[in-house]
Image (cartoon, rainbow over all chains, first blue to last red):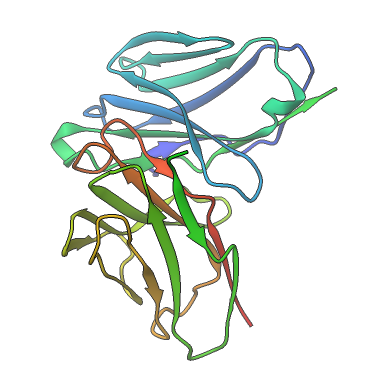
Length: 112
Length: 115
């Protein structure tokens, strides 16, 4: 079993839809959670960073962490064609020397 | 603008050949990293360096080598010992150590193909 599981998709939605992207993990020590967006043939860019549990909002993006369920989510409101990309979750723990574990990514297509 | 520059964007390697991927950053970050990305897999850490003249192996260091002679530069050499080098290689840096506790800044990547 992988430490971090992420549905590869692809996920196809119409423009304006609310998108939900998710990751599950097995290591209860994870406490730092990140979401990256990666456009085709580009490097990932950090989108959201969350420490421990709870929600964090930044514009159209909301990151949610449920440590009791070992489940994190990224919500995109009013999705745009420019949101079409691969979204990677990542997480780390102090006990692991902050070694970052990445999910394989979910490919998202937003249709105009 | 500050950032990470990787070159070349595309690289072709013949069997038995060593190739070097360049990574330069002007973010004044102490820590730098090399990751490998393959379809359907998460990023895998090859090497990382937290300070000049020091570096550590990651999870898949076999067949790779690095140097860190300058803070700004962290080149990766893919040697002939790496049996399956075709992949997308990403260089990253972070302002905190160890290992990007607050996230990484990535370069645009180098696509390496064996011909």
